[in-house]
Length: 101
Image: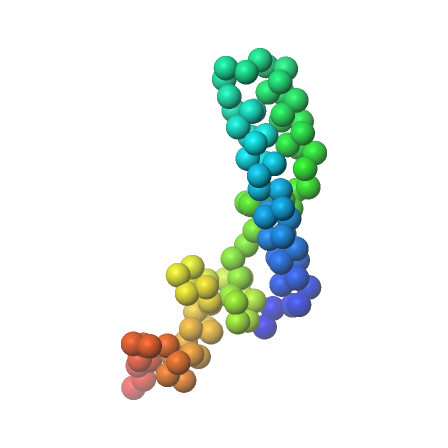
């Protein structure tokens, strides 16, 4: 089980990403538009830099929904390999049979 603080930090980051997504996209569009004057593009880059760092989607890290584990994460299932194995052994994942010999 991951530390509660780390899980809460990820939730906080996700909230910030959602909150600033539209503003960030608008500023990026202005900054990358070649037809705009250089000063306007530069001002957009400065405004983008003043936004909170945690509002950037690249700072998010995938975590298991059950345990909060950050490694060995299956995106399709939104859980780690360990949680998937436990659920598979318990017979709670349809079509999955854990082999044992």
